[in-house]
Length: 263
Image (cartoon, rainbow, N blue to C red; front, side, top):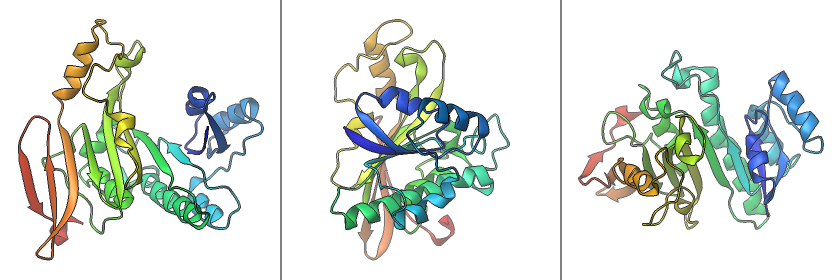
């Protein structure tokens, strides 16, 4: 069993999925209807409301620092169906608030002699292709880098990892391959301190995944992932210049300098 805190909790699909092996310590939801649903179904779990207040509450030890932080910050600012204001939108900027919450949790857990927290985050694929590189800002904040990370091309790959002060892995998954009768793609990201094998949470070993596919052939799902770009990103200090190195499953390699205007 592990403990978790949830932000942008909605009606808590996570708790419905994890109830047999995890314990929720707190929720964070501000909308009236989902808050009422949470109060009805989970009366013993506090709903803390505004997630921007959580870092200070955690540092003050008003609320516990969980093993896992989970949440899907608002997607409207990144969705191709929306206005795509990205980080200039107050809702979109909550994605960066998530970094402060994780930092506060890890600080308290370090003081307590506990292992670092694991972050599980979800959003729409549009977050990978915003003009302001929102995903690169999120990755840099989580990896504790001083500059936004940059994709190799015009957008971030559908799956990849960063190995820095934290290890991050992300992957775009489609609900139709997991027993749901609809095409619904979402980006999932898992992050934790370097040394923890978070990649295994999202990336299967080299074998058939066994996921349900529309045609009932598990190999087709495995092949579909192998043919998607899987980028690897890490930091290297070469002659005092910060560089980004990466590759993809489909082949190829690049190295580029991080320029001041990358910010």
